[in-house]
Amino acid sequence: METIEEKMRRLAEERERLAKEEAAMRDEAMAELERISDEIDALEERKEQLEAFLGLNEAPQRAGHGQITNLCLRVVSESEKPLSSAEVKELLERQNPDMRLTSVPATLSRLVSLGRMSRDQFGRYSLA
Image (cartoon, rainbow, N blue to C red; front, side):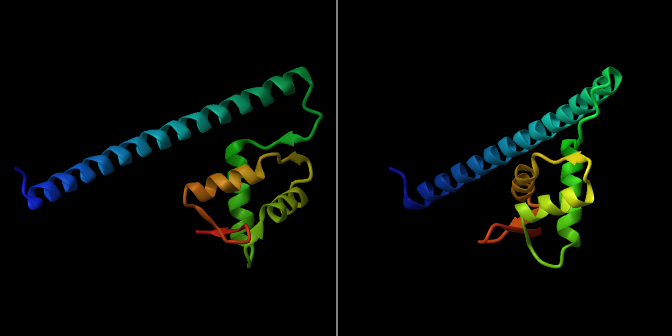
């Protein structure tokens, strides 16, 4: 029969094993996310090259994923107060009138999940 100390030790070992397994899964998921983001950036660049070659780039330039990330980080860092996603998008559109910025809210949420930004209870973003 197992003693309470043995059961507690076994449970602690199991918790530790599960925590390590979860950390490994998170690392794999983060690596996969970065790989996919890099693929998206490469595809967007190739698309722009093809559009330029075909003369289809007369529409507003579409910002690449990494470019939107950098623009969002810059706007939020330059602000003296937290900004809503609508305010961030408005400022970006004002600074980059010829650029289509379609995924600003998704980019801000992703930056929060990566720990690079924080979102308050009112949905305003600031640097973490």
